[in-house]
Length: 111
Image (tube, rainbow, N blue to C red):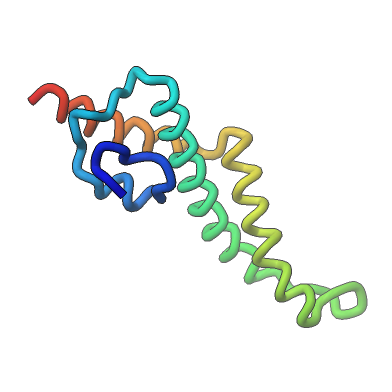
């Protein structure tokens, strides 16, 4: 991954850790959409982790569910819940990631 193209295919941790370069144009709609996608993906992962802990405490009635099948697919369901919540607007984590990264790039362009 080159430093001139910091967004496509990067996860949020790599994006935040990437040192801002002057080649990133915040005003470019393509870059802004990619940045928003990274923020939304990061928020979906965060929400999935939080929801996973919540669902760990829920016990299933053995008469109507449970077993290995439910255990295997519960994590997939929780992951999809996280994606759905983030896509619907989430809790504001994606917005903060976008703002933080945009500020880093704007500060780099001021120098």
